[in-house]
Every structure is written in C-alpha cells, then in structure tokens.
Amino acid sequence: MFFVMIFVIFVVSFQAQRPQRIISLVPALTEMLFAIGAGPQVVAVSSFDEYPPEATKLPRVGALLDPDTERIISLTPDLVVTYGSQVDLQAQMKRAAITTFDYRHGGLAHIMTTMRELGARTGHVAEAETAATGIEVRIAAVRARVAGKPRPRVLLVFGREPRSLRNIYVSAGRGFLHDMLEAAGGQDVFADADRESIQATTEHILARAPDVILELRSENIPDESALREELGPWGRLASVPAVRNKRVILLTGQAVTVPGPRVADGIERMAKALHP
Image (cartoon, rainbow, N blue to C red; front, top):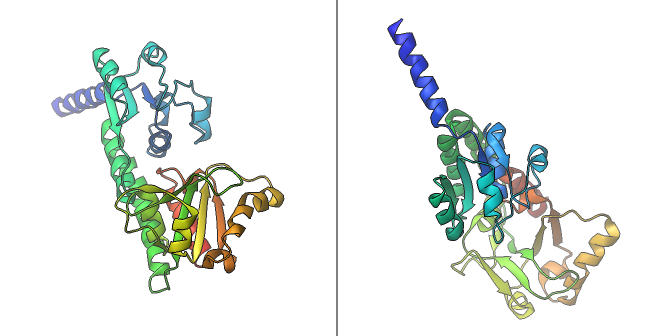
C-alpha cells in the first residue's frame, strides 16, 4: 500500500509539473508538439501555423516580428515556445512568471534534438524518442539508397522575386536545408560559404554552373501553366548546365521548407528529384 501511494504521489507531481497550456510562436515546433503527443496541451499558435489541421483551429497570437504579448498573457500559458531572437518577448514572459522554450535554427540533427528536448519539457519523452528515431531511420534509408551514386552539383533556391531572377536566396554551407540536400545525395554549389544562406546574383550562378537547380516553395503551384510561368525566368541562364539539360526542378509544400517532423518527407522528395 505504501508503494502504491508513493507511485500515485509521483504521477500527480509529474502531471502538475508538465505544462498544460502551451503557446507556440514557431510553426516548426508546433508541428513537433503535435507529433510527440503534446497537441492537446497547445492552446494557441502563431499567425503562420498551417499544420497539422488541428493547429489551424487554435487562436493566433502573432509571429516572429509581431507577437501579441497582451493576448499571450491573457491566455494564461505555462509554457511559451519562442524564437531565440525574440529576446524582448522572453523578457516580458519572465516578468509575467511564464516559462519559455527558446528555439534557434540549427542543422538537420538539431531537428531531432529539439524534438527530444520538447518531449522532456512537455512530459512526452517516450513519444518524442519514437518520433525522432523514426525520422532518423527514414533519413538513414535515403542515405543508403543514394550512396555510391554520382552527386549532382545543386543550386538549392528557397526564395526569389516571383517570375524574375532578382533577390535569389540559396542554401549555403550549413543549416538544415544544406543538410537535407546532402542527405538526398546532392552537392551544394555554395557549400564553401560558411553560413546558412546567401543572396546569389545571376553572375554567381553562372560561375558556379550547377547541374541541377532545385527550387523550394512553401506554397503549392495551382497548375502546369503557373508552373511554367514561375520557372520561365531560369531560361535566361541558358549556358548553365541545369537549364541547358532541363534540370530545373520545383518542389512545393512545407515538408521541404519547414525544419520539423516532416523533414524526412522532404528529403525523400529531394532524393527522388535528384536521382529519378
């Protein structure tokens, strides 16, 4: 009887310490919270959360640049997930005696590390371990499939002005996009730049001469006509091998742009595009 009482006290204490009202301002971590079973504890999300569907039904409390502090506090959270750069918001939460989980972007492995950290913070250690391990197994399987195959030199584009070749932002030598490309069997043409991204000019691209241009978009393209219109500007770089050999590829959807639990989906799609 004594041991039963001790166990009950432990469980009650654990439940009391586990956050019951979580607000997430980071879409990638919102996805993680739902993936590890902490979804029912989430009471509000950012303005840009689109996945999973359950998250879209929750109140919105701003985002990276415009968090609604008053709204956040009024929802009486016991854990607020913030970007590491939101230092003012973190200070306001501290003054309100609200705990924060402060997130900073990292590489591919950091996604699984963050999932495990969230599991520990939210009382879902086992679920987080299962989810993270599952992703790692899938990524390892992709690496095994592309091992030994020629690695095309890839320009990985994640932003540019619509229907133009201005303000082109590409992956560089570190960060989760670079790591995803490497896992999918590609070689980043800007791997020598020790940063997560750079703004590339057409002159840079001509000089690097990628074999493949792989462009990522969070939003879907409605039809073939719109797709041709979006990719059309690349035709101006006819001397680039990727353009000359018709290897300009557009992948859409947040699975290829959000560093969350769908990252294995994104890597599998990249690998299929690079090694059809």
